Length: 103
Image (cartoon, one colour):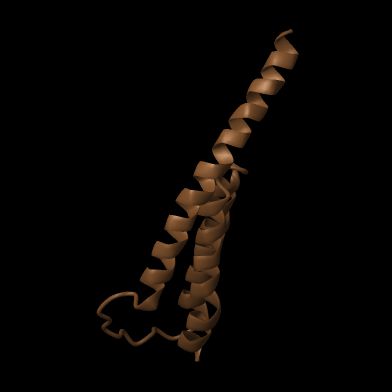
């Protein structure tokens, strides 16, 4: 039962989080830190749940991560395009603020 829930909820959430972090890191540089803290807490809670509340899962062999590799690759390419387009706007904004502050 838990394997099905893991595939339905946890994996897509992790991919969604990866997408948001990589695409918008230039707009909000603290996002990776918050994601790290979130993942650390989530891993600790899942470890407690695995140890105390569930049976050991039966291991299954897999060739690779399947279609998720293609999705993650597409998100990474989109992130590069997004960040390249966001950074020049931020740079000109910083220069405008510095010239106003220094004058």
